[in-house]
Image (cartoon, rainbow, N blue to C red):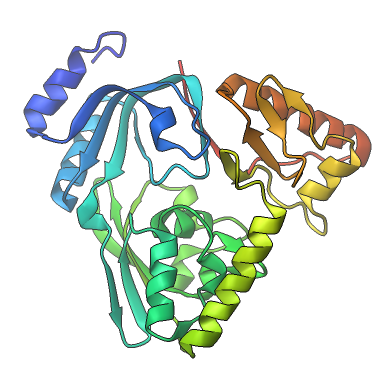
Amino acid sequence: MSMTEKKWREELIATLQLESYQYDEPMYRYTSFRIGGPADLLIEAQTVDELARTVEYCQQVGVFWFLLGRGTNILVKDQGVRGVVLRLGKGFSSINVEGRRIKAGGAASLAAVAEQAARNNLTGLEFASGIPGSIGGALFMNAGAYGSEMQEVVLEAKVYRPGSGVIVLKKEELEFGYRFSRLQKEEGIILEVVLELNRGEEAQIRAKMAELNGRRKDKQPLEYPSAGSVFKRPKGKFAGQLIEEAGLKGKRVGNAQVSPKHAGFIVNIGNATAQEVLDLIELVRVEVHNQAGLWLEPEIRILGGE
């Protein structure tokens, strides 16, 4: 099926009888960077069956597909996305507490899960209360902050694998590493995450959450759109410190800027384009390499283009 024509979109919708979709939907509406051109087709899957049928149809006819969570760790190129962008509907946002365990749909807000943990006197997820994004995305990236990571609290995950159906992966099978999980190297969509936490006292849990969120507000440029930390932390060093030592704090390319508040962030200070962000990322990488002799590796994911 030719991707140069858009007829495939109507055929996909008609074949799968989907109801929740948008043609040529601007991706800046769905990313924390507030940047990104249009996706050919945006589909919000309401059930596992609908999700599976959509993915398998796309693979069968050769249409590119990508699952977008809450868009907090991604940069969509100005040209947009040729193919299908999938989102999980409201049915994937449930949060249920059972003793010391929390079962959360893959699209559930990570902050909302942390809030439910606090309400139920469960400790261990305080570090996540101020991290934007979904719990599925947090597991995918093994998100972390202030010395804690998702791998410390995850028990298992229910994952849909194209062509194989739904499976359950235990913690040890997820192969967690620094900002890494097994799901980054193989196709799979996180449907549900099960956490196992410890008993605590709500007052102490909320005090810890308030402390960490206060530190985050003081140190991070939350007043501007961004995708969080742009670069992975080099072994034994901090990306932000290396960028600052290279004299790049506040450096701009158009309306993309290395944050004067925290050099590990690139912020959109006013209708920045994806290309401006990409150019600034490359400038930072080259300058840090020239100064420190190492290449910073981007932590954010880059999507789209012709």
